Length: 276
Ligand code: NAP
Image (cartoon, rainbow, N blue to C red; front, side, top):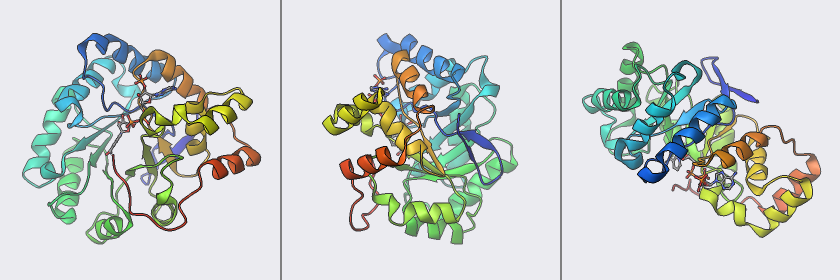
């Protein structure tokens, strides 16, 4: 499994597991837990969740899935922007830890930018690090100008920017990805299969067929071929988790990368960071 180095030297797998839309339907709860646990056993040990997902139920589901496996997992959760203040972040973090059934997060992210000044969020995050509640912190959905401001506000220790990035969302390649690479901050690509829409893309399907792969694998392998990028597909079914894991073993040669470039050209001009 390819690994990515965080700014503090920790290495994490380049392919993890997302959990948005999990824990929405009790009838599939055991299947979702089995998918996450199976993923951990296959090396997809980075799990991304958020207090927002299913109103905290996604964190509870992750808590159940990592029981007995906590030390193998790199656990990521996110705080609502309105909770990213001195007063509220410790409470939000504690509530996430309780739902997850753990004593620390490996990474805690600001979910998107709100009204709390970035400098205050940085201080609140650093206090949680000092208290041992989180091991490191990062952000999500911040474009280049926000990242500049974050670093200028004392946020140089930011461990990642989790952003919408996949074959159909290549806008960040203009300036955000180069900026993050220059600052040695890994990019965490969310919705890497465009919430499932990419698996029905005719051109991607036919190229995947030629390669004996699936379209999801091709979309993930394209992300994994890039430097500094972590992908966190969400898969509630064990078969999808297995399919995704195999993407980490798929190497794309220059001609395949070129064909993907033609099928999914990067926008000609810079576009503001998109969000789902
Ligand atoms: P995604 O991972 O691109 O797509 C998930 C969908 O693709 C699900 O319907 C899943 O089906 C399907 N799928 C997964 N693997 C598949 C495969 N091998 N073959 C066919 N279908 C497959 O979308 P996402 O959930 O939006 O993004 C991933 C994670 O990123 C989220 O879960 C969340 O943790 C994070 N995220 C963060 C933000 C943010 O603002 N920071 C925003 C969006 C997402 P099944 O579930 O049925 O297996």
